[in-house]
Image (cartoon, rainbow, N blue to C red; front, side, top):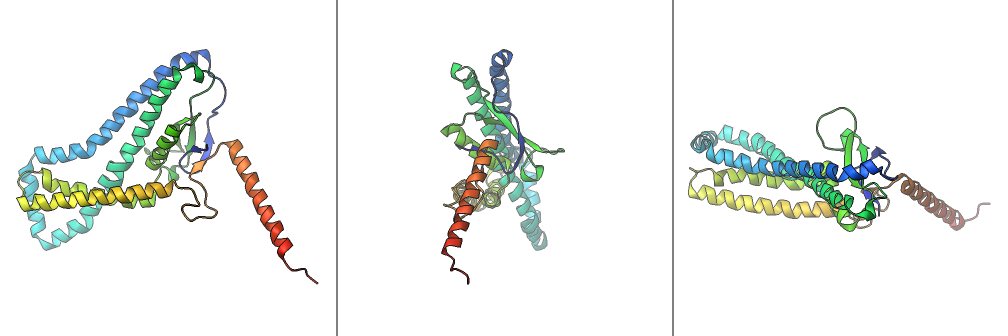
Length: 280
């Protein structure tokens, strides 16, 4: 099955070859270290939206209520908040904090734990377990820097479970317009939860905010599932006749794919010439 990567790949590490005896002895510890690091980072990303709400609710809730009351009492300020602050919070807390940051971490944690197990199995001793590809920075999310983005820990020997994890890997590390739009309601839902968790708001405000948060969160779930399925569906299922697949192939697979494509084009061209009426 083709390996899944995010976008156009410039180069990749050699996935072949047999590990050295020293590499075989050390790689369980290396993958264990990466598994612990990525798991810790994933837990940190989960704590960001929860911690922000807890901070607003515990630090100085009266100040939050008073500030919001004053801002919303002024029609001009209220409109400015709706047009500027709410979209900003929706983007930061929706696509960024609630989707991309966690999804950039947990697939790498799962893959690392998978390689820890594989590194202890004799059936994998004759091969490398993972490889890295590099992608153009404008096609991938990641920390600021110069040069291409390394997409590491991709499985040399894919399975059904690693293929599923790699789809989330792609979704987390590369930007998709439909998924971005699908997560915006979740960002607004997070903003609405401020009115629920911060003490001091009237009961009717809490009820309205909670109802709005639940409805917007459900909308993001439905739209996000649709965007995810559409992104990783076969080109035929998306209604495309000559679309580039979301999976990237190895060099040998890519050359074979090009040869098949050239043969199909040549066959179509030959059929068209045979069906064309003869010229005089």
